[in-house]
Amino acid sequence: MIDFVSLPQKAPEYDLRELLEAGAHFGHQAKRWHPKMAKWIFSEKDGVHIFDLAKTAAQLQVAYNYAFDLGQKGKTLIIVGTKKQAREVIKEEAAAAQLMTITSRWLGGLLTNWEQVSKSLRRMLDIERGLKEGKFDKYTKRERVLLDKERQRLERFFGGIRELKGKPDALFIVDPGREKVAVFEAERTGLPMMAIVDSNTNPEAIDIPIPANDDAVRSITYIIKAVIAGYLAGKSVATK
Image (cartoon, rainbow, N blue to C red):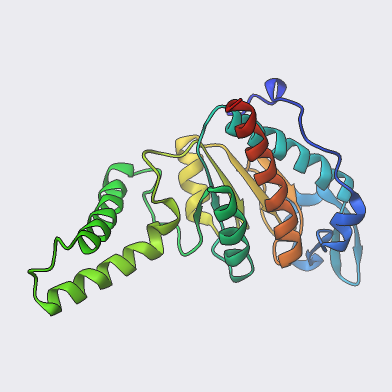
C-alpha cells in the first residue's frame, strides 16, 4: 500500500507537447478497450482511443514522486518489460542508472517463492565465479560446456537482477496485460506496482497506472526515463 499523502512533491511539470510527440496519446482500437480505462480516455479518433495527456502527465508526476521516495529510502525497484518494443529501452536506460531489470521472462515464484528462486540466482553467480577463477579447469571439456550452457540459460532470466538480495520493494511494469504473472505475484504479496497501462488493459491491480501507449518505443522511453530520473534524484538526496 502506497501512502500517497506523504510522498515528496518533487516531480517536474511534464510538457504535454512532448508526450504528444512521443505518441503517448494513442491507445488501442476502441473495440479492444477495457471499460475500466474509461476515465483516462479523452476521445476516439478513426476507431482508436486517445488518452487525456493531462491525466497521463499527472500520473507520471505521481510515479516520479514515488520513485523519488524509493530512491531516497534506498529501496529496490525492478523494471519489468519483456515485449520487443521495451526490452532494449529498459536495458539501456536502467543500465545507465544501475537499476535492476527483467526483460526476458518473468520467472514464476520470484515474489511468491523467493527462497527457491534465490537458489537459482546463487547457482548462476557460483558458475560465473567458478568459470572465471578456474574452479572448473579440471572438469572435462563437455562438463565445462554444459556448465556454460547452464550459465547462459540462467543469465537470460537473472542477468538483470544479479544484485538482488531479497524480494524487491516495488515494480515498474511495461504492459501489465502482458506481464500477468508478475502482476499476480505482486498483487498476492502486496508489492506496490507502477505501470504503463494501455487502453486494452485492466488497471485495477496497479497502484500507480500511467495511461499511455505501451507499444511505441518513444512513449515507453519517455516514461521510463521520467521514472528513473525520479529514482536517481531521490538516491542523490539520500547520499548527501
